[in-house]
Image (cartoon, rainbow, N blue to C red; front, side):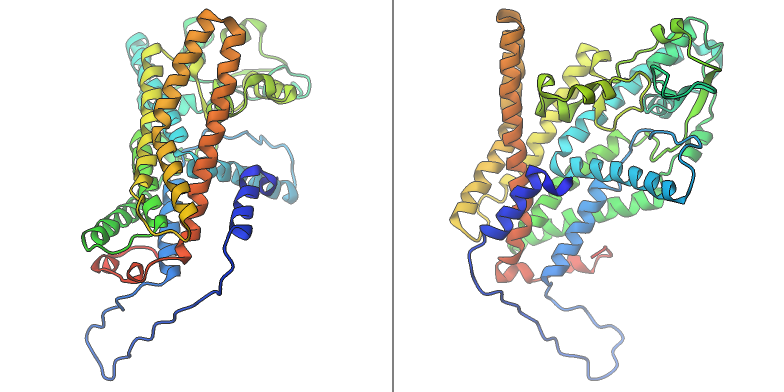
Length: 448
């Protein structure tokens, strides 16, 4: 259960038990009303706690939900008929989106890392296909490579039972699988799909995307205005800037990636079972979940979970990156971008170093947490180098010890990030008076 996780338990304990006992005070401003008819009435020069909260939350929502580009989900294919299963299937998809949003809130640099690797891999695949199979006369751009690596092309078994098959049905392919099938003659031609057809499957709405970007830019702009006027900025607004920076990076990386595509395209179909010689060509490795790779060493993972994740042809996970297929240069670039994003995200929170806090303990904790998340790039880089050295000198046991240590470092990183996440909401109720003074930026159209 989500609320039984250590993260939620820590947050609830911190909010309920740590708060010093004091009276809850409320200030209700009273503005004079017009006594006659005016052509234009300006808004009050104050802003309430809820106004700060809702405008920030809407921006964070735009930074974590509206930017999502999930991979192709598991296909229902007529299974589980009935309205109750319709609800269950819909909730299953909603839960996957909630998990992706949660990862984006807790560790947006993970999403940036995956998006960077996906973009570089799509560029490589696009170059290979256009160079080696130009004679197929198939339009193939970045969006096609993204769609393929999302698991959009599948092999189906029409009569075989899913319980008796040794692979997922349908079998989700990636671009490397398509190339193997094409080179070995199982595909006479790469699948043809015009750019318009691909865009038709995508749920990306330019208007919604423009609204989300406008809200993000407004949040950054109004904080800049407050800083120039030397008005207090809440930690929630400061954190919103950090999310906005990451969201803009993700938008750029995923600009050509189809969004919320639900359906697949069948490229091969077999009656009873996929031939063994075909299965041998396919890459059963769907990559590694970055979250699980660093938080939970393989020896501590459930064996049944490992088996479930290793079923050939399973849908491509949203936090999965195909490191096994990565070229060395791409791996270095991807890691550098991810660690750089983590440093930038933490550095924004360092700007709240001298902000007002309810207690001195919280101020020191904020300073330590923001410094740790900013300097984590150095800790991670040292850990990777040490793991490589230990693997060469001390063997597998030495490397396992280093990986366990890195997992502990990652857990500390997550708890530091969790503290920041809780503190930005807690301090909202302890703001200085000038934090409630509005600026002319509030007159710019935005959601609040």
